[in-house]
Amino acid sequence: MKDPICGMNVNDSSKFRSSYNGREYFFCSIACKQSFDKNPGAYAKGK
Image (cartoon, rainbow, N blue to C red; front, side):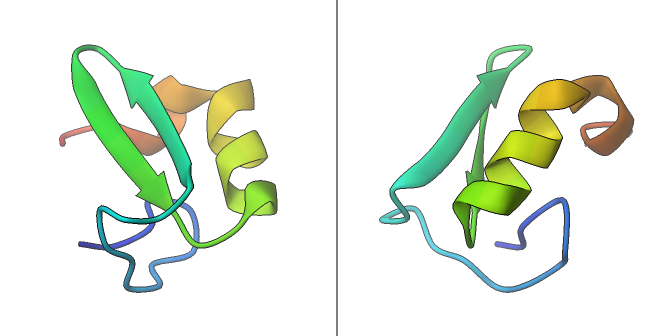
């Protein structure tokens, strides 16, 4: 799967994760997670 912020490949063992609209998102870093958490709707579009 891909980090929705930067597009980097990540797996479900990543410690950086957030839930939005019943779906779990995984991130490569805390910075990407924080960006997503500020505006999840912008990054979760069409997913």
